[in-house]
Amino acid sequence: MSATTPQAPTKLQLLELLAAIGTAQWRDFAAAAARYGLTSTQARVLAQLDGPVPMRGLATLLVCDASNVTGIVDRLEGRALVRREPDPADRRVKNVVATDEGREIIRRVREEMQATHGALDTLDEAESATLYALLERLRRPMEKDA
Amino acid sequence: MSATTPQAPTKLQLLELLAAIGTAQWRDFAAAAARYGLTSTQARVLAQLDGPVPMRGLATLLVCDASNVTGIVDRLEGRALVRREPDPADRRVKNVVATDEGREIIRRVREEMQATHGALDTLDEAESATLYALLERLRRPMEKDA
DNA sequence: CGAAAATACTTGAGGAGGTCAAGTAAACAA
DNA sequence: TTGTTTACTTGACCTCCTCAAGTATTTTCG
Image (tube, rainbow over all chains, first blue to last red):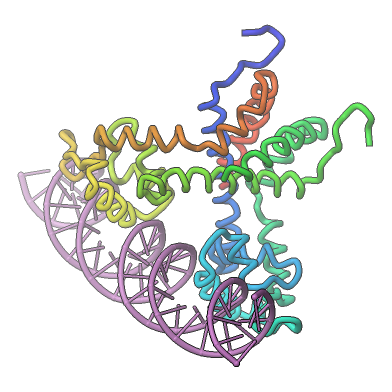
């Protein structure tokens, strides 16, 4: 134990803490989505729709079977939060686009993740920057192997 | 922009990075569990069973309805990874206990989260300690409001 | 004590998310 | 042109999840 460094955590402790934070953030997201009658999966899809995305692209982003996306988009389209548009360049493709209402709802969902926002607000600028830098380093290797 | 501090991230950037890390870790966990024929929910339950836990306790930990736990434990019990034991003090209660095989499997699942382990290995001791300290500060406020 | 309320669990109905197998339509390659 | 690959949908089937209802037990309290 050093006198200047904080306690060195075991890898297991760090892993569990990371999991706990991930779970808390996910619940915060799911709760915010639920206030608008959305499941977390539906909200997740909506969150990807900055521009038009083909069905196949959504399946890739969600890491799931294409047939699964059909149902999810069906339900979102049923609520007019999303539209299927034919792709002009390839008639096999359907591009999914968020409607104005869809964009508005996902904006609010993000905004209303209060537990997460509140927690991040407890960090000052330097701490945020440090955390960001460390997490940024974890990102690549975590997404690679998976 | 300071010359000595790393780039100060916006809250949105930090939020999204946190989400990306959480997603990656979750996928790593789910993939490891799948190698043993477990769904991520089943693995999550198994991970809680350090000692005997009543059905109701599991529902509380998972933040879900008690009736949901019945099915999950049914399937785990069907594979002999878990046992239901009557509680000696309260005959309404059934305590769920991991079997030796159940404990062994969840041990391996944790061990085989390679993306996560690999990523954490890229941090030195001081960095781990810093990350741990920062995340530890986020934990309380994130879990509270949720 | 004994009746009423609360608690622990299960069951059944039904929705959402997920996979796989098979089918259609369009694009592409030889 | 014929065969292969690609994008999407459908249908069967599973798990997860919730709600409503029912049973067994414990607790509370008049």
